[in-house]
Length: 271
Image (cartoon, rainbow, N blue to C red; front, side):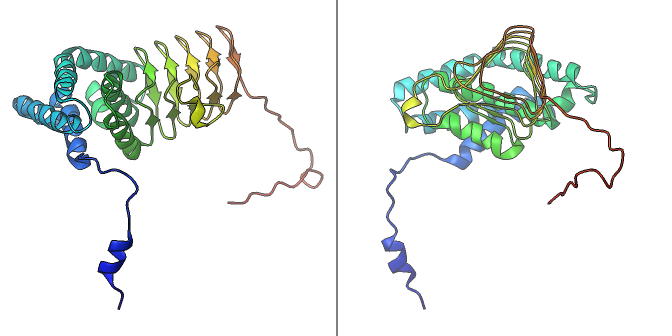
């Protein structure tokens, strides 16, 4: 029989212990979204209690990571700005409602659209990121990623009227800058050309200007890459260079008409 005590004693942690309650932070985030900002399926009367829960959890956890007075300032500033954040998110929801012909109401967007949930979590985590809170903004963004498959780094700067269609597989890197009225579809990557620790303090991800549409599967890489305003990037396009405003970038597709199946090159599919 194995000696559990001996094995446990031989397991040494090389990371420092953080006094974070990850589960409670996730509950606080859910409470903020579903009970405070958008109580679509809840009674409005629970809003004050839920907001107090969020406030308490954030204070308790942030004070383990930074100065107590600064932590209170950060959380106070965030909570004070919630009416403005809510207004901005309702405007985002209306963009989703107007952009998707399958959408039937704002309420449907709020409770059922993965892209809107990912954007809501990003708007929240980005505010704490700007205030210099470590770890927790990333914890929030990865929580959304685990639920809906949309990976938006909390450092990314995203403008007004941002629309995510479907959402699955989208990756938006830390130093990405996205303007206003931008639409992106599933599988889009806004990433870095190189992944090295030496570039951690440099702009590694692209800039997307206003009124750009990026279709499914497109990959746009590099900190110096700028997609000019009012451009359209087609599906599965690979871009590592800037394009001027009003560009339309598409992948070349070759179409052949088969005259005789016997003369055509065999195509083998492996699944």
